[in-house]
Length: 269
Image (cartoon, rainbow, N blue to C red; front, side, top):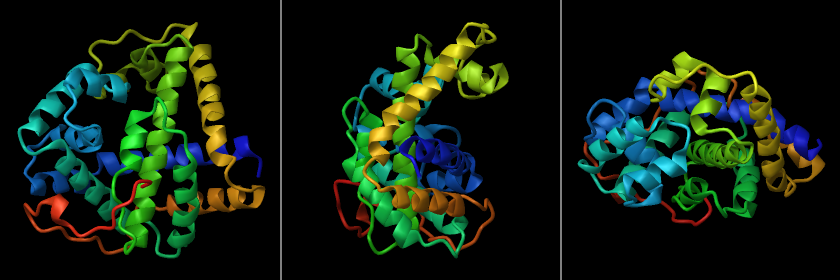
């Protein structure tokens, strides 16, 4: 499989599977067990906690596509609950638990994990701080299913960071890109206040940004051979093929500090 064909083939399923995780009530329930209030606190403090104790304006600039008020409110509410690093560890646990519940049992998660890890380790993290933060997050080697989901999440963060750079390079604001891609109603859902409808000239700019995002990701997939890229694309399809629970979830005790979970530390997700 050619590099760009692999990039475009896996982009949508990786994005959408991650979206299902982020919007699932089971994910929110993990945050509640960790002590976060209902709302966006666990999402913001957990997902962006890999940035450390950054000022809220820094967090807003790194994540890009969510409305600034949503991020500020969530980050502040989460900061009152626990340190950023601990929140990120809880979020990583939620990622792995959700993967265990939703990745189909027949998927060769060990092979997927091997290929995904090669991609992640080879990636250039310059100017991609959210991706770099998640790459540095520890990932247990004794949980192949959970590790596969976490690596899928890390790859999703890579594309998201590349897309934010591509959008700005093409002359679009993040808000405009959200409106072009999802429409006004969904842009409001993601925290943008009263966004204007997309202007006609913005649509080709967004399409250009999509193509540029593919190009920015191409060096990542050059690490694999043609045959390995085809295998990876097939594994992504299989891994993301079912939204229904397939495996028993890992049950985390209430208020157990995520940092206390025994894991194998590594620097490459």
